[in-house]
Image (tube, rainbow, N blue to C red):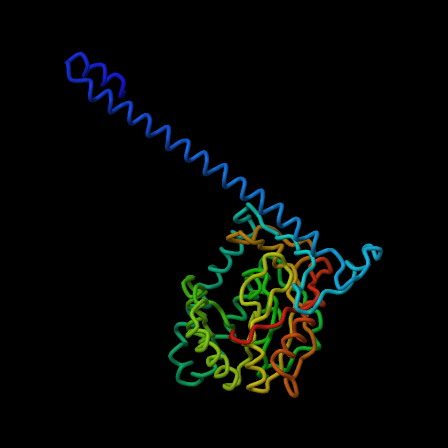
Length: 354
């Protein structure tokens, strides 16, 4: 188009300057393209150098240290990891899926809201009376939430099998249930324990219709992640809930594990146990990661082995620090995970977190 315009302008006798401008524009474009190609080549060279350097560092890390002879072969690699190194020598494979949902997920979502209609209506109607008679504990709301979760899972044949039921505390006993976190279905799975409990959940859940509203009515503990003031307020709310006589359920990893292996625990639950003197019940949830893999909006498939919840013996805080409690709970939960995703040990907890 520029060449034709230049020719038309030349016929009119005023095209000399226009043609010069067109040639200058082309020259500028060519220069910019050459500069872009040079930058791309430089970026590729840096990437190749970084990969080569990383491979060299791995080879250097695999060599024996402290004067140990190379004749030891692979014996050095078989030695146990240092406690301050990463807990996994090889990171487990992340179970991600391109499927955002499956028919089972659509069915569970439908049943969740189907059962919510009558149960949440009762909850709303009874709320003024609950505030009058049981404002601190609100056990009536928690009981309705328990029925709601069990009805949803049992309607699709997914009610988890409970292993170690003899380790469950008596109903109504203030304890802290600490479980691994692999999927949003973990909360529903804990309903199979048939125990009323308050959950520590993220604030985004409150935006979900009926589910978030029931959490708000039941006065569960809500945390805004990334906000340090909220973390301190959450810790105080945990102490208040426990001292009011409630059982508390928490996922000490703080977020879901995409690989299935346990992540580093946050110390808030263990500090609360030491401060209040209530025991911790470690719980291992299995099968929910296969039910709803990372990246899915809804459940995608039935787990091959179904869902199961393993209850471990209670761990009392007397004579233990929060770090010791964290390690004991970590080892208990980790022991019931499949061998291929079991972690060797927990990393040293970070004291500044809540």
